[in-house]
Image (cartoon, rainbow, N blue to C red; front, side, top):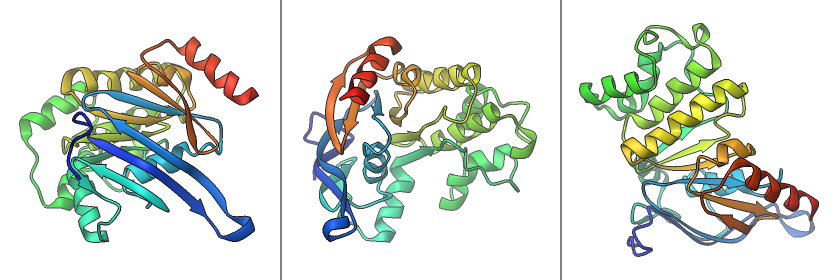
Length: 247
């Protein structure tokens, strides 16, 4: 697969995902096609059970579709073996999770550097210093997760996701475990990573304010993309979500 979709860095075509068999089978995705443009933030929203987390896991190579194809940075990933897929994810993908997923025995700096440590690579000191400065962790690097606030832990997680300069950063409910003031800070951080680093972001969220930082908002319902918006405010996004919930 080549990057023929106008330079899209992630391309999904006719992706389905079925869990189970026979009468008890559940179709989490029903033929989803989407291109993710580079250097932009895309938000994925939808009611519970709409398939948004399943879609993100498949786009990121954490799960395989029942049918259809997914390409990342020009490589079709649906046919890759586990080793090649792990290598591709290491080179091209960063993750930010709702519950941070930091290793409790490592300090903040060690957690940030973990993807490079696993890959046997040394950090670019200039990039590490810039990243630590940008996420506001300079005086917290020797602290372990238990000594950090939720917002600080999520900043560590974002720095960890960005340290290897991934082609695409996937964020799964990145503000879901934070208060509103801290959420706003984290969203600003993600927005700046797009504006200043040219980072591509795909964010699954139920928060209209979070989706409002994106250039594009996709709405899923019953395993299909049913609406799409360009840049817009949280009120507009919330209105669409209410319409989908009432449908």
